[in-house]
Length: 148
Image (tube, rainbow, N blue to C red; front, side, top):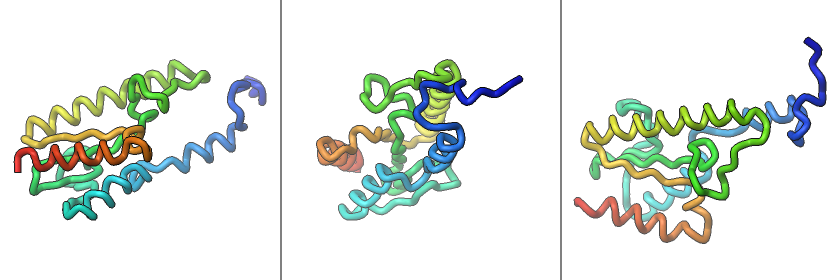
């Protein structure tokens, strides 16, 4: 099979550049995650990160409050009705399948944690933009203080 440089015409990068860009996307210590962690610490909350004792190593674990926090990227976790989530125009079926699998896995993980008695808070990156950040983080504090 002959590989053409024009196979992926709607992508603005060549395959090598796209591959490099994708390899630089982090799964831990992302900017939105750091925003939440810094806010919690500055407000006197203490936590563990990526606790291996819990299923799926949640981003933030607050044992005192029996709460885990997942900070999720809108694209990677298929945040519906979000301006940051747009299905790519190339390899659409592959991306759709990948994102649907992530959504299903997230749902299963949350269900398991809730069955184990954990409160689960999910924060999408769009809710941490400068316009929404204060409201979102205030809601998190309110949720943490609800039962304590």
